[in-house]
Image (cartoon, rainbow, N blue to C red; front, side, top):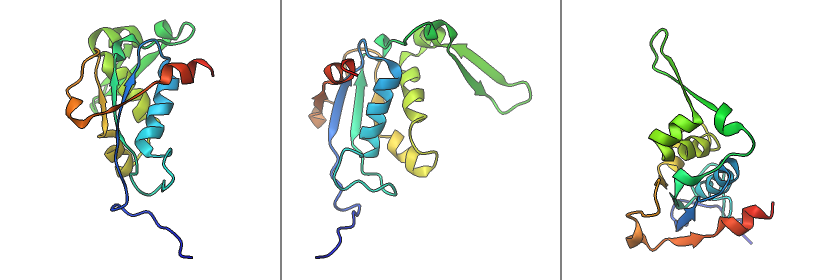
Length: 149
């Protein structure tokens, strides 16, 4: 019996829709990062992008536990001296609600060109509508799965 080795020709990509309404940011990000990596597939290989496309809707309605909503700070540096910028979570949610979800998921992916390739398969929308209906995405119900944890 020969050993099966995953190649790019054997990878099949699915489309998933995740509704983030009322979910906690970190728990949502771990599930979505796992889908983007492809860890749920039997032919997962850490050196290949085996993951699926994920569409996250209602990103503007995520929640954080405790008092993290007031205390959480995001930092960004422009590259110039004195170019450190910071923004609080509540300010980020007012201006760009999808960016908080993107940053949380991006931090859980590999920090190399493979991780950047996986991140390109993520689509995040602040509202309930998305333009990917032609791909016939399957709705993934994380509400029941994450509320039991």
